[in-house]
Image (cartoon, rainbow, N blue to C red; front, side, top):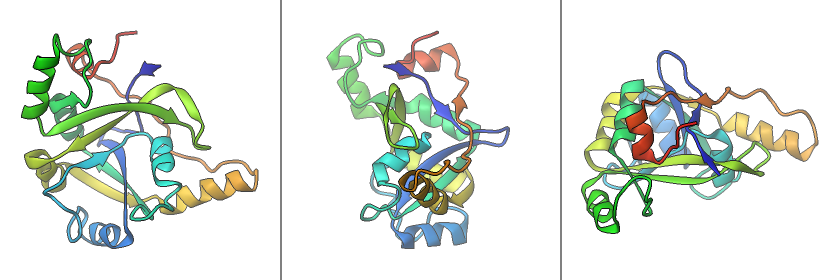
Length: 194
């Protein structure tokens, strides 16, 4: 399965998705960033693929995932997160040995995982979707420096689910394109050059 970072982005930033309980989302929307209920002391996972987020949250129906936020990050912030990422499993494309990988994993605050991507109907695609686990100083920078906007996309998730159940056309969603990265960052993430 191919690996590319597909994301909705514009000149101001890139969108990633997270699902939470309603209290966390309401507090975040009121502040413009995360606040009450959001735990800065644990790893939080961000996903640029809307399809994967819909799959993971069951269209925002799973417990503590009843609301989905589209979080707009600055490009600098997103690339910094990517530059700190170490795969959750050993990948010989990225590290020369298991010991080197283990040391890198111990030293990082960011973990990267590649999972089978999903379309809006939750069908598995022949490509991988990236998700990034962030903790420590990185999660504080995420909350305090890098978020440039928040949008509640729960109504969109529910509209997609309803259209699918009623066999109606799916609503329009933000276009996800290949996110541009330099060769060094691609190599560090295990992305092969086309």
